[in-house]
Image (cartoon, rainbow, N blue to C red):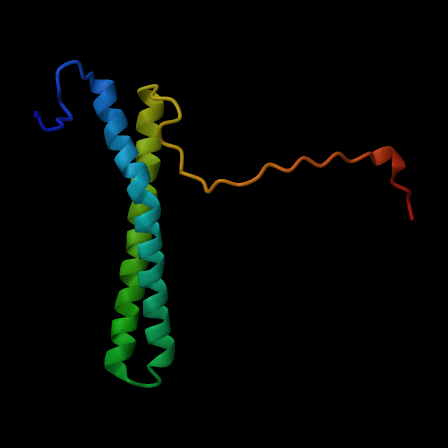
Length: 115
């Protein structure tokens, strides 16, 4: 049995890029969540430290790294969207969304009375 290879025969450059973009699309929400958790963990340490200078410093450090991680994630995501637009890869870089039900609302504006 041959192991799966990303660069197997018949793979084009575009399919390799799609694989990489799929992996990034899966990791992006996880990394955003971790960055938010680190920031809020630091915020809670900062608020709840009540005068302990060492804990305040740790809280500030966590908040700094959380904000830095969010900035880097947003920057990398923006660069990927720009590059994929230039390479005409289509919508391969959209953020994954949670499934929701579509609800249509039909409003008859003629029947609305003015008060």
